[in-house]
Image (cartoon, rainbow, N blue to C red):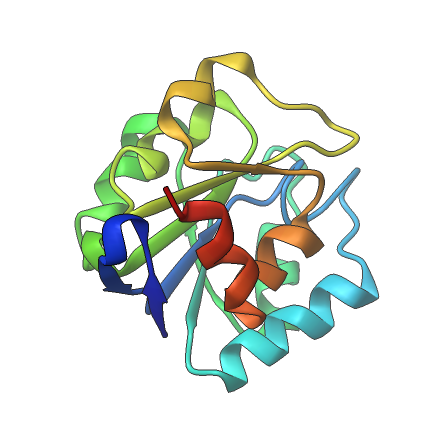
Length: 153
């Protein structure tokens, strides 16, 4: 999907990297609406990849339910390593925690979600957009006009 960015710059997002705990799920639960959005994004042609520290041990089951790729990254450096296998200029990252800095630093577009599990203030310098929840973050890639408006200078 092509996005109109700042200064009329167009860029393409093909991959969406998701953190699990506090981002895709809240207290270990992925909502029905979030699941529906994931399937819609896949139908639109996005590759959805879950990179998680898997602190609750639910990542494998959730990835299977959503039919998305899963990579375990126990820290920010391991998450950054996984990003090296992707086209960074065509990748967006969504997360909420300090462990996500590795994905944020290596993505074209980084989005933080501020949900019930909180947001680590150390990620602020590494994100482009902050949204209230995962559904709002995912919707930016479904209804791209809002994303373009947010990025406009």
